[in-house]
Length: 367
Image (cartoon, rainbow, N blue to C red; front, side, top):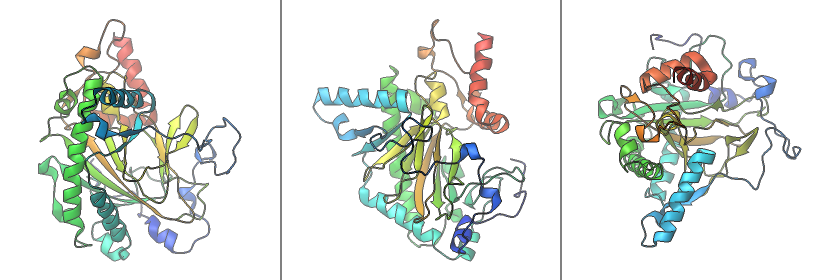
């Protein structure tokens, strides 16, 4: 991005929250149609209704590596159904130590509770977004989300600069280095499962991303402070992830992620020691829309703050991404034109939320 600085002074949401305000500034208030419904007993089938009995699929990965062929096939089928129908699922027994997951959450919670002047040493800019931030986008006067974050690059190694990672707490750099290494391995295993379920070579998606050494991977740690008026704002506005796949370590005490399901929003109930995985736009493209990249958002809480770690697992930015040739047929032509991840991000940034649909329309008109 050409812009070197933010278009207006940056507001640190955590500082606002801790100031004791009882009403949020106007620039955080969402339009009426975008506000979450907080009524504990919404009418049945109403938009924004949260059904306590519904949750995204939960998949135990231990069955994939055991000797029971039937359990393996059933688990693969559950992964396939989750990718096709939900675009989201949770994974247990995924190979990442629960202790490491806990330490990763704890060091970042500790970072966000350091004095503001410590965090400001890592203040970011729109140039790369790397560092401590409180807004996305450079549109002046934009309605903002109720969250702060820390964004850092992990892969490719040429973009990794640990001097930009916080030095406090003192254990943070080592913990996040260890955590990121393990989550990248998990991402490779999940891509393999997805490739198999699509009827492709088991290394197809990983190679489409650039291979294990050249794929893109970055971490966004989200901090959602307590909010005095959670019914007026959102921690993160509705969106689908533009990248390949997101591996989310949710807060273990506070729910907040909501997934669109038809006209409703389903609040995800995190399972202890599980990761939440969701399909991004690039896998939707590569699968020729067999797998779905689903819109989601984050609600905030009036009593508790919340920390989550979103690990984005992306194609190398200059690789051409297009539907796999094996998934293109006369009855199901390619739904998307070839485009690099960099080109796609620029396109979506320009076109906004309707960009994906416009891509399908433009491709269909050319076939």
